[in-house]
Image (cartoon, one colour):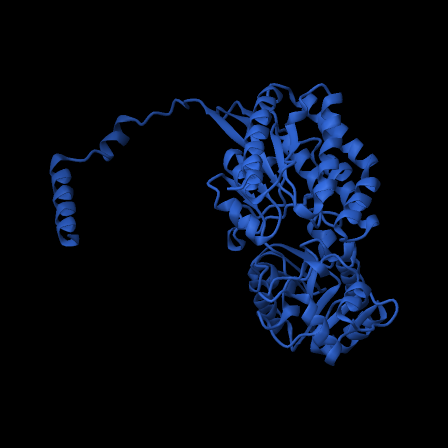
Length: 479
């Protein structure tokens, strides 16, 4: 092991030790004080939303400043509005009649894994939900977004100091490495993982309880009864938001054949460009690494950047590049997740075929995450809702905005659970309620079994002997 790795491991241990000490004191505070601290962080983060967005774009090269700013506001101001009335500290419920008391208990120190696509907003969001539920949190930053994550953490630590509590409630590794991150996950009490499949898998394999999220490969089905212009407009609003860096953004459009031409015309009118021939092949060559993984050079980039990278010309004003994909699977790159200005297009004969195609696309790297449908047919919507293996099905809304709770009543979140089918421990938009244990104090109800009931469940010595003999006989057969 090289010295850098050893130092990183030692740092992880030291940060968690300090966080545990700070959290023990923090857990003694009441709900009002905890709420005041989360409010102060929300206010400060909102004030710095613009500057943090600029830092993130300048460092990573991903996305757009105005959209990063919107994410920061969602993770601070709008998140606070959603959590401010949550009871998360002390007695949650005292049921006098049922004789049971429910008490919130913090989980302790959270290990926060932060992606490069949403670095500042995810840091704010995870800090606030952790503190709201009485926990401390230590972050391991993505290598390509270290500076903006560090700056965000320092901002939060400054607020904690002003509020009279330990800054060590929120901290970040300054010497991150794979080995250090693994150690952080081992010594923390819970892992809150947002990132690539490899990191999320490592979180679940660490031996520490974890809440992780899977990849998104969101299909957008436009059913024949849909308002096509509205559907296409919302898809563009979502897919171009921060240049597609949100995992809940649309990755493929599926249209019924009776409206397919109308959908295509609307896509072109909104700034879509259908790739064909050599241009398509050149874009495919820059989309992926040799092993089939998404090329990080295209993540969070606009259409013009990707076209230049591929060495092709596209019309001025192009917002999305589109491929009429022929299939689903490893050989069809537009059927996979593309966190950028690229999207696949499919035509199906009817909603039943569309339903099956959506299932295939989800199985190709997005199962358990999200799906969006544009339709006025409630029967079709219900069929999709009953059968699709997703944790959130979004109806007539931009997928990005709907999934994270901007245009829907879903909880404002940057950690979107994928359920067990997606390899996640939760299907929730993760909230402070996911980050606490509940201790239940249960009193005797005074309803002991009466003699008659007892007599009905008595077992004779003869019955016991017969059962014992049967068990011995079965064990002999197994031997």
